[in-house]
Image 1: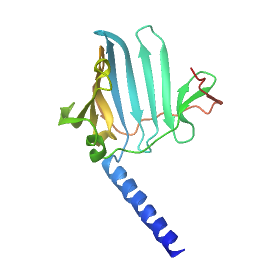
Image 2 (image 1 turned 45 degrees about the horizontal axis):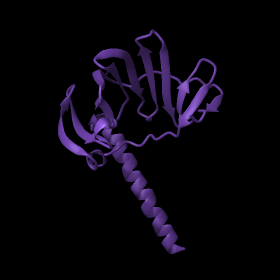
Image 3 (image 1 turned 135 degrees about the vertical axis):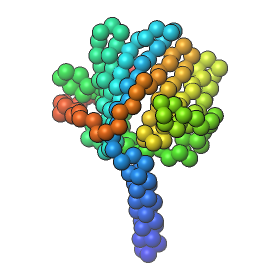
Length: 178
């Protein structure tokens, strides 16, 4: 029984330290604006707004004129926001990766992008699917640039401060399996 209590205390301590580090790393929310190019053509612009709580909302404006929204919340998980429902896509993780975690796999270099220190990683599951990511530890590990084949997503600006958004309280459906 004492061993179990000791293990619980150690786990609580570890989670407490991780929570403290994550709160210290990002004290407030932020919003990143992006351009997404495919084969050199702009296919969409979008914003990725993140609250201090870790909840986030992306609003995509497609070149066709259509708009789509995706959100991540502790209550719903990751959901596509539709006019009359939310479609659950996956679970939610508000975990903030540490710099060590970002560097742990496929590390290339540390550099700067849009005034933020970024960790660059490159992974190539196959030669045709190499992906390079520029992630900012100061911004909860947000991706500021991503390259894959003929696709490029590039942040064009970062605004610090708590964003204002609410994910609507709508019926939730599970995403259909492909």
